[in-house]
Image 1 (cartoon, one colour):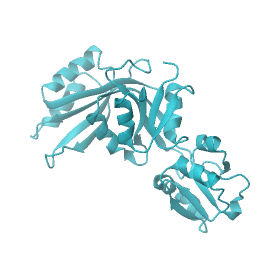
Image 2 (cartoon, one colour):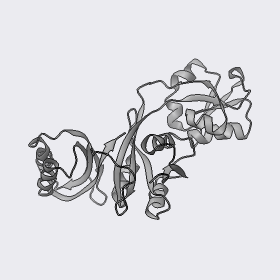
Image 3 (spheres, one colour):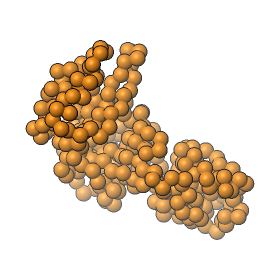
Image 4 (cartoon, rainbow, N blue to C red):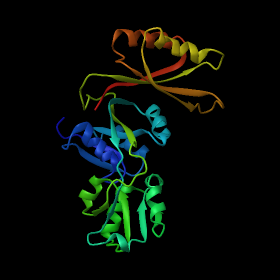
Length: 276
């Protein structure tokens, strides 16, 4: 598919759009949505060929809402990519740094640039719903005393000028994104599967999780991540999201999943996918 339509949460110029480009190239057509549940709904309604969602950030951890939505919808993970989060201070053309009194951005972005605000105490940080939306706002309203924190892609799209590059506190700030498609549709992307994500529940009794994990250890399969989420309707019980290295269609992982099924009350493979 040369020009797939890809749903994402945020405004054009968001880091999710950068992830779309890394996953599918510049020909992909981004479809902006206000909320994550709308991203999944656009995909389910066949208004988008694929979707891209953030699933984990190296500083703030997992995006739990999207973990829950993965289980609620009939989707397949096709690929993943990591986007380096670079926060730039941007303003309307002609606005000098010395005139700034306010900086707008998403609260997470503001909190990732605390050193900048500590060094410039006269500048007030103002929460905004979206990083790219903040960049669009300061230029569309021609704010002469305000700037935004956004990506370089947003700066290019909205014609704002970058006053200071890379003002984030931590240069090792990455967000991991999933490329999703409907399970009933043809894959949007192709490539060798290097990782598999699953979700499962086990009986609430001693040793259940240990036995579940042993199916991978017995076959020398490396686990990349395990995450627990509350099981609705069953207080203090949990479902587990797990990533392991390997393709679920290969013999050893397939045997491990069959063995795991013997210990589970429920088990779903979310996808075997490549990294890009």
